[in-house]
Length: 432
Image (cartoon, rainbow, N blue to C red):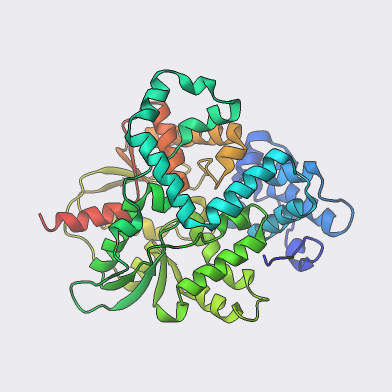
């Protein structure tokens, strides 16, 4: 969506696409959990259409319903009419924020601190990440938990404390040089996006991504300080800030200078390929945003597109693969990660039951809707354990954290990894 767009001003044909056939119902986790029509994509679109027609206004009940949606986009995969549900949901959530349907002093403070402060200023985010790392590395967190002091926290913080991500000692800019060259003459020049949470908690995955790109003849450009892509803002009803983040990123990475702009986080990637629509009415950025959309590539998509080199090193692991919603449903990338995993000698890939079913992370859903998120987490963990795999691979930091926490709750000896990291490991084994 573009800033200022509302359900009332939206191209009405988008709302009319829904035929109310119901094929989305079995794929929707919230409808599956409640069997309530209101909690289905079809039901939500009916509410949106009523607002567009002037029959309803964005009330608190409407806002809560839009918040209850995971935004997993499984309905888009199932829909025979090609309904652009992501566009509708983002527009509806922006309407909710525009009229303040869910407003409260506490919510306003939280949104300002997260969306307007932390995720618009990468240096502040890194500083707070460093404080959290010191808290964890010093043993203070372990002591805090051992002594049972978690129970002294306010109720909401007590629920969130176990979900605290493990911060790595080095961020991406400390592991990856601004420009790195492959051993032989480069075939491509690519930019590498390091993300926000990915930068703090999974900088090693970013290093692995750079190594894989280098191994496949890419010159890798990785600016040390990168702004947020704006996905969190767009998904949470703040398109104006999302547009500003898009402009900053385009200014940092001129799309005309690269063969591809690489992302390794599914949630970011799904948003990054929609800058053309987000900035379509911006006379300065519209053309560059369109080129940006054409250049953004998920790492798995890019590797298959350029014909990546099959590794010779072995990785003897029994692996199952969880498909991040915004990779399989948002970007329609499903085969490529499997092709990469199957190319690794010694790796046994076991198909995961309900591999495309949401794990409950869904951006900040496990924070805003903890009960439903926990139910989905348990369901996902049960399927993972049924495969008897030692490793579950996924390609999104939110999924990685959600599944890791779920496996930890049942003390399962299953490691969460990412396909690109397993490929990087196989390349490194060639040198042994």
